[in-house]
Length: 179
Ligand code: PRP
Image (cartoon, rainbow, N blue to C red):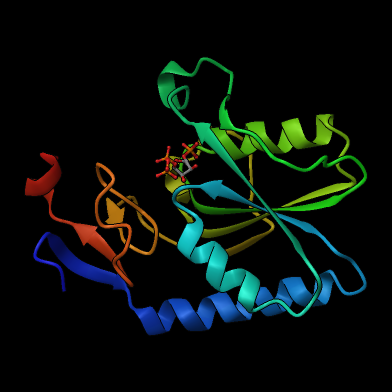
């Protein structure tokens, strides 16, 4: 375990098996379709790459990077797009893949935006859901793990851009982030 970790919350094996199970459900639901799978950079990249390899349906891949600075109590009510999609979503079935829902600001805004752009359907797949932090009315269609309000790192999630490459999800020691 990394020395900055308090403890491991989810092991590689637990993540692997749950991601497979969720991907199987999505696979069944999208038989006969070719959804556009949209990864939200950067936190989702590891989850995204595991998830899409567990799907048997044909998929197209695309990515967005958005800023969540407007989230929480000081919400600007607007999502800042740092990198937009390459593809036109009009008439497409879109699957958004996210690492974590916290306040729900990012996904509530993204979902509305993709509907505005004419997507036929927008579904949300998340790795982690911090239900107790929710401020916006958003529920993932598929979620791997509901977690408590801990500072989590690894498997794509960072603190100051570090720890994303840890293969498990750990709880960061308080002394590292001064919490
Ligand atoms: C995280 C996460 C979501 C968002 C969730 O992104 O990946 O996009 O915050 O928070 P919310 O539900 O309160 O909107 P972050 O801004 O940390 O960027 P990153 O993915 O590059 O780490």
